[in-house]
Structure formats: C-alpha cells, structure tokens
Image (cartoon, rainbow, N blue to C red; front, side, top):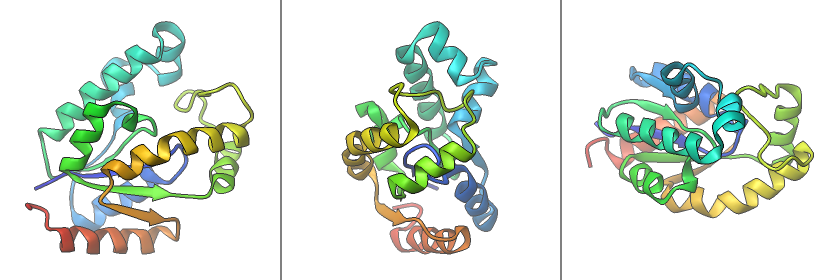
Length: 173
C-alpha cells in the first residue's frame, strides 16, 4: 500500500489530522519531526542552531526516504520537506494531501502554541510576516507534489475527505 503523506506549512494540522486519519484507516502514523527527535535524540531547533539547516534537511530527507520504503503509513511531514526536489519526487509517488490554511489562521495557531523546540523561526520576522513569506514561497512546491489540496475544515470532515480520496485514487495504483 502507498503511504499517505500530509504536507503543508507549520501549524496546518498535519499531525492532528494524521493521527485521526491513521486511526480511521487502521494504519501506522509517523510524524517526520517526531521521528527526527527520536532518531537523533535532538530537538530540531537544537540541530539547526548547532549544525545548520542543511544538516537538518539532509537528516529529514533520510527519514522520508526510509519511510517511503515501508508503505502503508500515514506520514505527517515537516513543513519544509518540500524544499528538496528528491523529497517532492518521493511525495508524488505516495498519496499526498496538501493541508491548506489561511496565513492568518496559521499565524494564530503558532502564536498560541509556538512549540519553539520543534518550530524554530525560519526568517526571524514576526509570526504573521514569516507565515506569509514562507507560504508564498513554498505553496508552488506543495502543489507540485500534492494529489489533492484540502482547505481547512473540521478534523472529522478532513479525515472523511482524505479517506474518500484514498479510496478514489486507489492505494495500490
């Protein structure tokens, strides 16, 4: 079975929706950010601070490549996973869902629950400015590898829509 990849910016709900989807479809769930922390025994912010973004992105790519070989999982991907062409190619071979939310919604979620160890600043700008800038840059990459762009709605509705998409696309196609 193909993996179902959830992509989108920070705070778009990938982990929340992913856990609910995995439960509904009776599949294992993996969050690439959490897998990073477990595998490298290091918070993402610490890796970026000590080793730089390139080291983090390489390790993130290694995790995605490993997960892509297993199949049958629901994978919530880090927001920047689409920055590498090889990652976008892997994502396009699965069933990839882009969780799209308005920048204001994302900024509000980040302000309310910043989780700085997992979500280091990408630009050093205010949350609102950073979200708008990063989303405008990454949106074309998200769309490039997504089979479906899913606009924000309640978790249950999103899970139903993704499950319908998986059934329509076909897990083994």
